[in-house]
Length: 146
Image 1 (tube, rainbow, N blue to C red):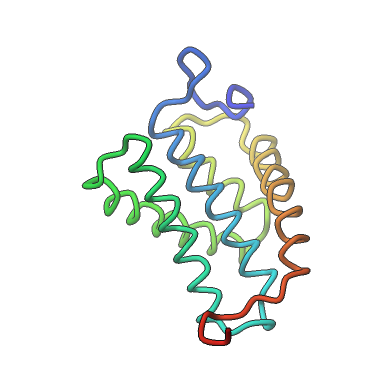
Image 2: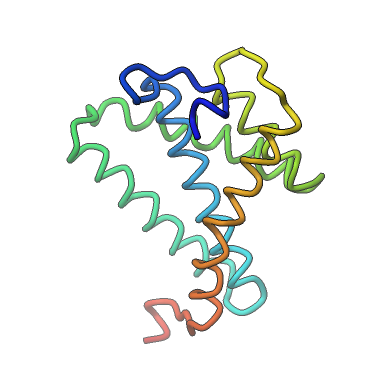
């Protein structure tokens, strides 16, 4: 799939930057699924708490797997910037999200944008749908609610 996206690979692995961009995209897809699943069912503060826990777990896992703790704040800033771009694109269309991801993923190269953006959009739906279906059946409560 990476080659079809136009992501450079070395020995079947993407560059560190591309790998991080893919991780940010996956994090955003899961965050978006959580938000959409619990929209108007639970308070926004509870959704923020869930997402804060999710992101802290990802960052701690990165450290446990060799990322220097000092790099985490810089990575968090990148995550915030990408999320802002992806949410802005999502307001326009799903295709726009695919294009926004692609801009960061291919490091300045221009593959066939429309086809690749559709592939990324399709992948996002494939990733989010099972999670959203699972979350739709949950009754999420804040810790203070017991």
